[in-house]
Every structure is written in C-alpha cells, then in structure tokens.
Image (tube, rainbow, N blue to C red):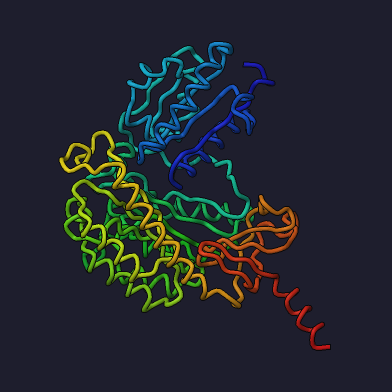
Length: 458
C-alpha cells in the first residue's frame, strides 16, 4: 500500500466499551503510520466496530458493510474489517454473508489489531473470535476528546442475564491490575486530560478475578479500593465509572464516592424492570425493593446525586400489570435520565426462544409510554439546577451554535454557554444556570454574571 493511501476509518456502534476499543484500535493504526479519514470512502482500511445488543443496531452494520463491499469490487486493495460484538457473535458466518470481508475480530482481540492486519496484508482472510486472555493495554489510544478519556478497568462479564449477548461476545471477566490502571491515568494527567471514566461491562465486579483476600474475607481489590488508589492522580480532576450492577452495589462504595471529592456525583445503575417476577426471569439477581434501597442509600449520602438507569419494556411474557410496576418505579424514584429500549430477541440468549414474545405494537406502545414519563420526571429533576452555579468541564463547540461551547456538570448534565472553544476546551468553568430543559442546561459564565449584576446596581 502506498503512503498516500494509508488512511483509515472506524465507525463505532454501541456502548462506551466499544468507543474505548475503537480509540485503542485507532491508536494502533496511527502507530502503524495510518492517518484518520472522516470519510470511509477515502480510507483504505475501514473498520466497523459493532454492537449486537439490539437487532436494529445489527442491521445498520450490515447496511454500512454492504456499501463498502460494493466499493471493494472497484478498489480491491480496500481492507474491510468488522470488529466488536456482531463479529464475535457471527464469526465465520459473516464471511458467507459478506465474502468481501478481510478481517472478522471479536472485542477481546482489539489489542491484537496490528498482528491481525499483517496477516491480511500477507493475503489471508482472518477470523479472530477465539477466547483469549486480553493483553495488557499498552497501546496509546487515539482519544476522540482532549478533555475526557475512557480507561478500561475490567473486560467481559460473568453475569447470565437471559436477554443479553454480552457474556457470549465479550468473554469472562478479566480485571486489569490497579497499578496498570493508575499508570494509564497518570499519563492522561500529564497529557492534560481533566476527567476519566473507568469502564467495565459490570464495573462493580472489578477485582473479583484478581488474587488475594483481606483478613475480613472480601476480595483484596474492589472498585471501592481502586477509587481510593487512583484518586490522587495528578491532573485528573474528575473520576466517573460505569456501568454498575445493583447486585454488587455496596454501601462501602457509596461512602467512598461521598468521601472522595474527585468522584462525580453521578451513578448509572440499570434497573431493567420494576417487577420482581420479570427480574427473576431476566436473572438479574435482585428485587425492585433492593433496587429502591440502593437509591435511598445513595440519596442519604449524596442528596444531590444524579441517578440514571436502563430499562427494558416488552420482555417475553410481560403483562400490562407488570409493565405498570416499571412505570411506578420510574415515577417514584425520579431519575435524571433512563435509557429505555423495547426488548429485542438476541441470538443465543435463553429469552429469545421463550413463549410469550410480545408483538411489536405492544412493545412500541409501552416504549412510548415510559419515554413520556421519563421526560416528565427528568424535567422535574432539572429544576433543581435553576439559578445554581455549576462547574462545567468544556468538551466541544455547540454544533448548533458556533457562539456556544458545551460541557458537562459533575452530575453529567449537558450544559451550554457562550464562549470560545479554542480558549475554553478542557477547562472547568463556573457557570450560572439560567435555563433548564429535561436533559440539558444553559447558563452564563460567572464572571460575566457578576459584571452584569454590578452594572445594574450602578
């Protein structure tokens, strides 16, 4: 391949874990001498990093692949790869469906991209979906942001939720060592990053697979211990973590978050359903009563904390009464945001073959009803920000208004205000909130508010 053609493009579907994987693959490609191309049609290595958690996400992948497969007939030196969860789920079957593919690689192989591509350059069609021990993350990711960064702390998932493909496609839990995580965060601090999100498919499980126990009999390393261990990393001013599982969410973890000033007051804790029988059939391992106790505990220690969640409606066999329990929980807790989805049968999961699959009409109706309630409750929660001064980490220019920048509060509320992105990007700015919406805020830089108020008193 000539130097002029050494461009790459990665399209990412799905969760934060996929985004982090894409950044690592981009870092590998740039170490190999490739340059990023915004347009896949100008790239000679095109990778689709895929998500299989919903059927519609999977179908979008095939649509994109089809266009590039047609292009490959005109440009045979195009390298076409599919990574992520669809790749792991389908494996060699993808080569039957899209024979133009050069590389099929599961998420556990993201750090092996250079070796796998070399096999492709040598003329091979490569499938890498076997279970492997994930190599330590020694690559330098090409970070999409200059202010915030993902840091993987645990890969895989040992849960067996009956609707979920993640354990099948991402493998068993593998925790990174605290020392490796801290080292990566220290490097991010040196590079000027202000915020780190610690990532895991089930982050509360961090450390269960690492050796050693305490005299009290608990695991030597837990997420709580990790937060204490990395809290003083120089330069990092905010720490977040996701995604949590109610089964492992402890009072000790909540107390640590309350004690450690850098840990953001934002918790993402999926509840999935408000009905105990549905939760049991989902194999979630908790009741709605336990979930409520967790939220009560969070609010006891941190009354202002933002709480977001995930919910699934239309699970096989879900009755109208059971769905209404989900609405009741959503109404009574009052979340800042709930990511909602209608149940989508996924290949290889128990629930996909159960009797009692609901019609698309019923699922669509329930999704609309819960979304309506989520919007109402989010609007109520947003009211607490009105007139307050919030610290906002500036991330980007507002794509809809070139005069504004946007960033997030400690509670993860998207916030807009007038400013120059070249001057403010990566800085934490005090902003007085003067407009609230269900999922975002608008404000004015505090210095400017003071000037206006002073002028009015003259």
